[in-house]
Structure formats: structure tokens, C-alpha cells
Amino acid sequence: MRKCFEPSRFFVPAVLAVVFFAAATARSSNPTLCPTGTVCVTTWHNDTYRTGDNLSESAITTSSIQSDNFGQLCSVGLDGQVHAQPLVVTNVTIGTVTYASVVYVVTENDSVYAINGSPSAGCQVLLGPVSLLNNNFVNQPTMSAVACGNIGGKDCLAINPIVGVLGTPVINIDTASNTGTLYVVAEMQSGTAAPFTFYHFLHALDITTLAEGIGGNEKFGAPIQICGGLLDAEAMLLRRRSPKSTFNAPAFFSPTAAAVAATRIMSTSLSR
Image (cartoon, rainbow, N blue to C red; front, side, top):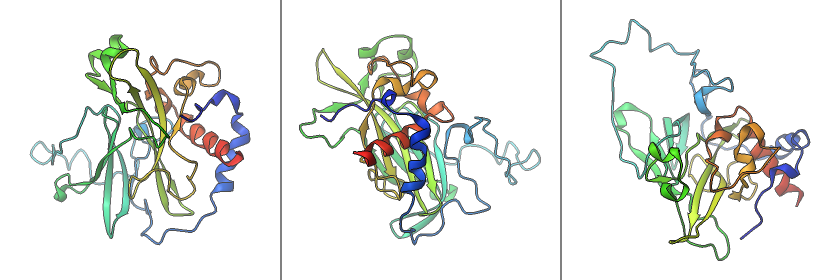
């Protein structure tokens, strides 16, 4: 198995320039992602201040919403619990069809879905479930989402029976190449009996296929194993934590941790 990525070995400001260096790539011929006049939700609570505000909202108002015209429009069965916020990208081309909006959902079973966001489509699953358990390693052991009982602690009360993707992903829309990449951290375990080994992996998925690491300028050799320190957003450069006891939510609730993770790993890959 390849070496675990150690965030504390790299200096943040030095690698942020890598994003601009790596951005030179052919522009996709698909219709423009997130065009003007549409709203994309690409991070937890919609912006880096975590306000959840949509300042461009015009259809939903106090006068237009009534008890008889507002509620659940459709539903879809998934393969695990959902604790991460679903994300939305508009004008996404999947195959030969361009969809007005696509909703990206991740589950505690380490799976990713792309779902048609148009109400008339009835929550049609466009892509998925795509499993994040195959990390493309030579002689990789069989992986599964983490049985919550193997971790212990109070978190098992709500997150049960398995833990996989807990944190909200981040989607980067690269306007120069007209591509989108979904970054997501998946937790998993190997072994069918104690002692188990626990892992976290950062994946980069092309939003038009959910294939790994092929979206525009995001080619950094994903997935990459991450040591526990990066998953503690408040102290990610100061200390390391055990992959067993560290859930993956905090990094993607942080305004900058996901972007830092992506740029640092891109820098690491390009410098090798």
C-alpha cells in the first residue's frame, strides 16, 4: 500500500499557486456548468461563511409558498444513511444529455450518487451507486465501511450501523476548463475480525461520470490515503490523530480545509 499522505510536511502558501499552474487544460465542449442566473451549491451551507443563504432566490417567497404547494416531491432509495449535505450543480452533461440540475449525494456506505434534480424526473438516479472502497492499490485488502461498534463512543448513537462518508464533499467548478470535480473523504476498514485497520482516503471524482481523478486540472493521482491529522480542521497542521478515532466531517465543514487538502496533494503529486 502506498505511503500515507502527511499534511504536516508541507507549507500551505507555497502550494496554493499549484492550482493556477495546473489549470491550463483544454476546455470541455459541454454546455457551461453553473451558468449565470443559476445557483450551484458546491460546499456545506452554500458558502465559506456557512450561512446557507441563497441571495439569488426568486421563486420561493413567503407569498408563493403555501401548505398545499410545498413539500416532498419525490424520493429515492440509497444504500446507507446520509449525514452529509447533498450538493447541487446546474447544467451538467452526463452522457449525451444535459440536465438542468444534478444533486450529488454521499452515504455512510462509502457510495456516491448523482440524481436528477428536476422534480418532473422523480429523483431519477443518473449515476451510482459508485463505491469508494476500491482504492486502486496493489494487493489492496478487502475494504468495507467501518462498523460503528468497532469505533465505539457516543457517535454510534446517531451514526449506526456503519460509518463511511460523514463529511459534506466539496465540488470545484473550474471555469477555464468547464469541468467539475467532487472531493470527498471516505472512511473504511479492512479485516473481518479484530484487529481491524482503519483508513481515510481523499477521492476526486469527475461530476459528469463519477470516475476517479479525471476532471480538468484535478489530476493528482486520486485516491490518496490521508493521515488523521488532516481530518481535524482546527489543528490539521499541529497534530495527528488516529484514523480509527477521527471522523471525516470536520475537514469539509471547514471553510478552507478541503481546498487546502486538494492543493497540497496536487502539489505533492506534481513535485514527485
